[in-house]
Amino acid sequence: MKPQHLLATACIAASPLSGVTAFSPPSNQSAGRVRPRPVSGPPSTSTTSLYQRFDDQALLELEERIAEINKLNLEAAGKLASPGRSPRTPQSLDDAKAAHGMPWRDTIGRTDEADPLLYMPFWEWQLDFMESSLTNLHPISCDTETGVDVSLNVNPEKRARIVNNCYASDEYRKIRMTYYDAGDSVQVFNSVWYPDAKYNLPVLGIDLLSFNRKKYLAIVDFQPLHESEDDHAATYEHILRPVKEQYENLKGRMSSKFYDETKFFSKEMLFARFEDGAVVGRDLFPAFQKYVETHADLVRRTPAATTAEE
Image 1 (cartoon, rainbow, N blue to C red):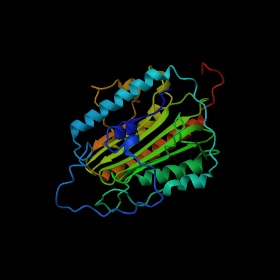
Image 2: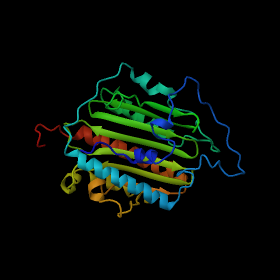
Image 3: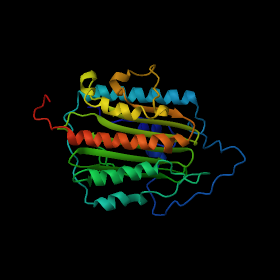
Image 4: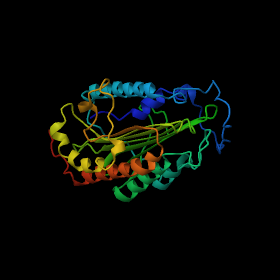
């Protein structure tokens, strides 16, 4: 099993807003709404970044980063032991959901939009679905292997912040949710659902990105677990096909120049690069919901493996 789906991680790694040195510890003072920037005049050259100058070439370069990371993940998979579970945190579920002021209602960054947190409805719907549909849902630590707490990082100077929530249930050993907010410049929602190790099922990966509210990139997929996935994928791809067929805008494909899609993505991956923001609510949101519901239903209906070979 590949460790995780890392499109958003690749995206954030490419930004000068990210990295340990770029973020300061969160302060106790609320960021509040930042006054929208004037319509006239170019942005400050000090904040001009990959995202503010995003074009088709930059999207291709991002896809290359994704392919490289997924290749490393696949190579590492054979070296990893069967994944275990993290211990519960002392927090209640309600406290974990509300930690760090979530769900945020306003952006820390500059905005001209009435709804600056573009993907927050996805975050809220997913949490509600998890709470109503999964058994024994509870928060778990989001610390790194070295014990660093990455649940929240804020950079007031860059007007950017990132929050991570981690949960587990009887069905899933880990569900990680990440939201990256930098105003209109960047909005990212990323989530990875890891089924319990007793299920031989794909990981659900969700990556939704917006750049300047002009360029959008979206991937929702049941990630293959094996290099040769044809037989295994046959057990679930037919359930996804009718959903994907409803959304012409989500039938795109990543550039085959950078990766072998049979290794890293399923044939029924939702993939879209678009410039019409209306696609987010009209097509992406209902398709995302259906893929999440389908994955959870697949886990519930799948018998647990009784041997290591299974």
